[in-house]
Length: 161
Image (cartoon, rainbow, N blue to C red; front, side, top):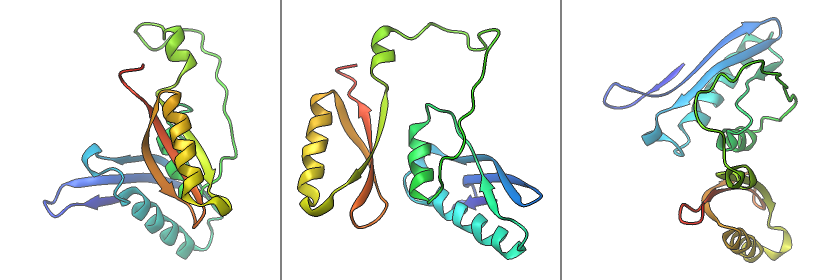
């Protein structure tokens, strides 16, 4: 399933397959210049509609890397729930490169925070954003889940990292 732009080129895609009772998403990708425009959510909603019409599918399964906090926030904003945590025991390091520094381990590049404005409204959210700024994070993205519930994605400020 793909979203095609006016220029005839793919902007985003979702690949999937069916097993009894379930649809498994194997890949969801949106080109960087088309991200945060609702394209992936539109594709996901189209997939939900497609599998609902089948009548024999009870859930849609997808996963992402534990450090892909932006994808996790997007999934949760779409109504998906986190139900599994997988563990691996690597016998060899498959990634060639340097080990992360102590600073990189202490402060992740992205920080995802659910936030409920409650009766204080957006003033309380601004105070929270200011608190995170004091910790070295800038607001990267805001996803509205409902009138009062939000997912805030912060990114570590380059000049402090």
